[in-house]
Length: 371
Ligand SMILES: *Cc1c(COP(=O)(O)O)cnc(C)c1O
Image (tube, rainbow, N blue to C red):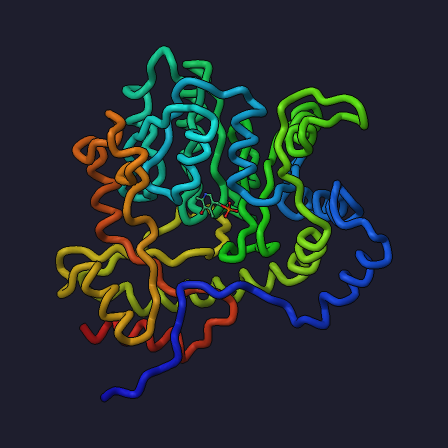
């Protein structure tokens, strides 16, 4: 029998040394402010605005509640055009608001919503577009905005993967009406659980702040049927600590990304997804597409890796539109989503995280090359 190597997962949360977190906890114990927009919450909102280059940011308990609240904040109803190629929370946030998702196919190069296919899906009930910057690769924000302007639609970006991603014109989070980040443990920047809504003006930020706190404006005034979406002080404090390490984390990820590209580019049948040259990336994911010229199918390679204790992930398979609560929608037909269907059958996300050791990454690469 082969010697079994220790497991390698697709990601591993970034955790600074525990000692670095204790002073933060001490501060919370001393202030006895555990939540409700305490000092760390306020500090992290300011620090993230500065770090990301955005005007207003409201912290949330997680990105899913932030997505649900974002739709409430803009009073979105009826139908929303979205992508089937994402994490299931994107479409779930629509269902939780009684909105009908309308799935539109993705672009073969970016795997993001294909703007050229949006217009055909617009009806008199369409009120918004909810695209996703998949793997942190920016959507075609100009083309999407043009369509939104022409049809008077809102644009809400699920930017769960796009922490720190910049285009030539600055943060990608400044596009659309609202953008939503996730700070879940598996994401590039994590607060254990967490998320945020990015918006452009103080009035909207104020409204979102009310919505995430049951609709309270003051002790006796409730202006909306809000929810409890507040981030706690422990999570916010952890975010402050993470922020100190984020630049280094992303640099380590960048090195891993470059090494994969260098060593996998020559492998027949393996295609790495490329970013446009001007993008400053966060290297949160390393997706490869297993094409026909490779000697195994994607699922065969996935299984082969598992046998070798390497846990790559098939993000995103199945497509959202194939889950039982969506598959009967007219827009969920696989025949109208050929690019997304193909991608979901070909893509494999390889391990990438700051603590991934070079010999571990080499084990992943050697396995793919040995077949
Ligand atoms: C992680 C993720 C979410 C959900 O984020 P949570 O913070 O776990 O609620 C939503 N959309 C996408 C695309 C994601 O990857």
